[in-house]
Each structure stands twice: as C-alpha cells, then as structure tokens.
Image 1 (cartoon, one colour):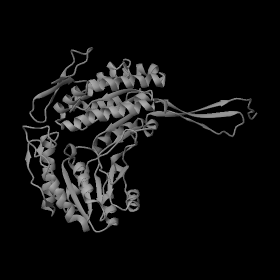
Image 2 (tube, rainbow, N blue to C red):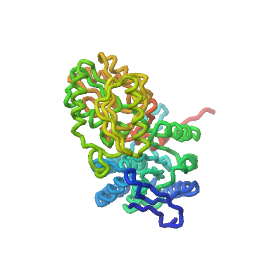
Image 3 (cartoon, rainbow, N blue to C red):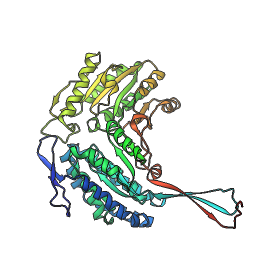
Image 4 (cartoon, helix red, strand yellow):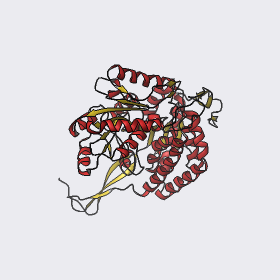
Length: 477
C-alpha cells in the first residue's frame, strides 16, 4: 500500500484509493481542501523569484538528479501504478522509461529558451524579443499514464523557470504525490514543485481555487473533453492561457495497397494497448472495402492470440479497465452497434472491470461507437469504397488528436495525411506513438496548445520585447 502524507500536515484528513481489482485500500492520501490548494499556490509564488533567475545549467543539473533518482525508485513507482490503476506491468515500465526520456529532453531545453534580434527602423535601436518565465503553472494530469503524464504536466514549465502546482488525479494520488517527492529529494528548492491531492467531490472547488489564484499564470490539463471545456472556460474567463490535451477518436486508415500484416499489428496495438485507455488509442479503423475482409480476418486471428483477462492474473497484456462502470459503458456501446447492424467478430465477455477485446465490423454513422470516444478495447471497423471516403470518415468527428494511414504509395499516404484534421498523423505507424522532443496536441474538441520539445517553450513563457537605444534619438517637439 502507498501512503501519502505531508510532514507539515500530519493532522490533515485522508482519503482512500481502492484497487480496481480487489477493492482493497491501496493508497491513503491527504484530502486537501480549498485553503490547502491556495497555500500550495502561495508556496509556488514565493519560490518563483529565486527559481526564475537560476542559471540554465543549474536547472539542468537538478533535472539530472531527478533522472538518477527516478531510476533508483523505478520499482516503487511501478508498484504504485499497478496498485492504483491496475495497468499492465509493461505499461508501468513504459511510464517509467518514458518519464526518464522526457526529463532528459526537458533538461536539454534549458539552454534552448532563446529569443531573437529583430531589425528596427529607428536609428541606433536594438530590438530584442526574449522569453521570460510566466510565473506559477498549474498542471492537471490524468490516471491512465500516471507517471509519464504527471511528469509532462510540470517538467517543461519548470525548465522554463516557472514554479508549479500539480493537481493530482484522485485515481492515482500516490503516484502523483511521489512525483513531488522525487523533485524535492532531487534538490529542487522548497515551493518549486507542489502537489495537491484531494477527494473526487473536491475537484471542482480546488480547480477553481487554483486557476483563479492571482499567482497562477498558465494552466495545462490532460483529460476528457467534457472537463477540458470547463477548465478552458474558467481559464479564459480569467485571461490565463491554457494547454488542453483532451479526448480523441483516432482513425487508422488502411488503403487498398497497405501492408496488411503491418496494419493489423498497428491496429491491434493501438486499439488494445492499455485496454484502449490512451488518448491516442485507435478508435476507428477505416478500411478500403477491397481489403476489408482480409483485414478483419487477420485482426480477429490476432485478437485470439491475446491473453484472456483473468482476475487471478491482472498483470498480463489484457488488464482490467479503470472501473466496473467503464466496462459496463463500453458493453452498452457494443450492444447499441450490434442492434443497429454492426457485426461482432469476437466474444463479448464482461466480468467486473474486465472486458474482452472487441472486433466490431461494419460500423456506421448513427451508432454510438461511431461517434463517442469508447476509451476501451474496441476495434471499430468502418468500410469505405475509396480514399476520398476514407478521409471523409476519418474527419467525421468532433475530435482531432491523432490519425494514421497505411499504404505502400508514400506520395499518396502523405497527401492523405495532409487532408486529415488531426494534430498528429503517422504514416505506416500506430496511432499510439510519441517522443518527448516532438510537438503533441490536438485540434477541434481534442484541445489546443502543444506539449513536447521546443514547441512547448512558447506555451509556458511570455514573449517580452526589449529595445535598447544606443544613440541619441530626436523626438517630435
């Protein structure tokens, strides 16, 4: 069991996080109230002046200490993720290694926060556009990649000279609390990294208290579009820029000339990895009807090789969903589709939070699974007559996070990619893919702004114009 407490708030009330599998208590975390949330923002504000002027290589050195310590604590982080979210061991390991890679990349950004000299028409004037830390940054991370996305929410803001408050998910408070301990024990000064854990019913009040705090100057949120709209509206009302990485309905297009073996492998990985509980998960597989029968046959065969969920072994490739309610919701999506003409090629079996992988063929508009984000292990196949219809179907959604297209003619696949309304598109690769140096984010209802690499620097800094007059200037009388 992970137990999170604050050394200076030992009398604070605690709340419990229970295992999605057994129902046993796995975490006891501090149940922060609104006053505690504001105090965290106050601490970040107090730490900002000194941290914002720390030299880039001093910041980089502290990130290196965090990387070294994360390696030492990898097993502890993995166990916390397994206990709190019941993810597969492979996904927990990916979180650790992905977080290490992200910290390395962010550390390298320390000396890349640059500006430019802009030509001026005024004689003797030098005009400089410089990037400055914004202030306190509020990061809100989800439960489905607890360590990786928790680190992402605060790492780039930190290297840019901001201080941060991480609002933990109530579904993985232990993991998110340990992120704060990681930075503290790596030598980050007091108040630079603050973590707020809370009960579910306190979330709206705490989010509002943090966003409206005068010292908070930037907001980033990763989660559902429903909640993202609330966060974005509140941030906008207070004129605070926000990076929102929200829901997705990622399409993987299989053109008639695609390598079906590669396409099937990518589709299975994208649809069933972490039980489809990834923002980039393959939600629709859009297949040219010329190869649709073969594709469905190969995918169904592939699914049969995946381990059947078993409540006595939750660490296999197929693990439980985050809750029984999530499994029931997805079961409802499947029944709705079958009732409206879809063809189910795999057995549908629900046991508590466990749900077998689903291959659902001949999905069409009007079915809930065509439109709604399933966030579960559903490969929904839409058959199309040609490339133009494939693009139309892929774009027929309010979301616009990730897309993929498979085909041997790279000129044609590139043309298709450029027609897709998505923030990210992979050619001959799975929808679930990311690297810390690459910009990542969506359009439409999938949000706006970008995490990753140099693109994120602009999100977490202010651009200030500074002019220097090097010679006397005449002014109108």
